[in-house]
Image 1: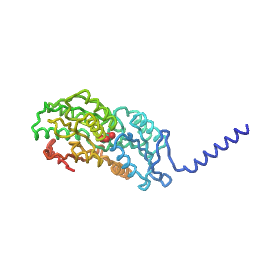
Image 2 (image 1 turned 90 degrees about the horizontal axis):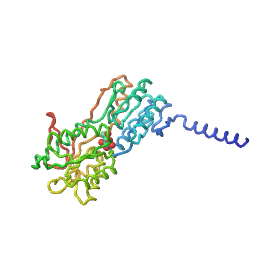
Image 3 (image 1 turned 135 degrees about the vertical axis):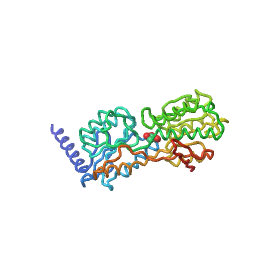
Length: 349
Ligand code: GYE
């Protein structure tokens, strides 16, 4: 009896002490991390539900968000890593609602399945800002605004680059044998980039041999490419829906004794990719193992911060804010590409 009273006192003391030392901290049941805590000084509290840490792009994006929504800038940020699972993101949003944050920032892993939880945020009167990928909801009033890239446009630019490459090098469409390493199925970046590839395949008459998801990761990109190489003998173009998948695909190509490069009529396999946000990716362009990258800009932190500071001043943001992007290639046979009367320069690093 005495022993249990003693234990209770110890437990109470420990929890009281830890409660004191963390008086200003906000934590969530979903292993959320408190990044910046300025709540005591009347700062703006933000819950940020991130997709995960699947790629270099994502890690740069996370850093950009944390830097902009810092205590120095007047924010208390609760960061939650969804580990590429929508269910984790839903739990995080519910926790943010319980904590009565001022804003929820959501980078949704996939487009579908957000109606219920976003309605809960709306009922709680918490504005939701979407970043990067989009949501497919019945009522667009369930979120305040979205900022990110036009993934379908990125895909069109890369496909148009391939078409121009074929023209410049006198390669017939029937000789193009493509495989697609898709991103996470149902994610805006996968849907948009795949849509553009399918349209181009129909428009130009290329052969699309196979498609499978590499989940935007390097390990899965390698595995999927190794499988494609075992199954199809005549692949000469790989459409990788991000750079990490491309790095994995290059490994698989080299492990199979083949070469990644532009000379597709003489046995090389051309790699097309998206992001271009790391030195490693740009180096692969320089050394010719990646032929073309559709740029995808991960630096959304300052954009989201601007939206929030404007909302604080009563300025209504545009519902959709698209970021301008380039394409990267070291090949000099294609100088520009044109889409809907807009010409895009090709950046040669
Ligand atoms: O291309 C990829 C990341 O949604 C734009 O997600 C983002 C994509 C990006 O994992 O690298």
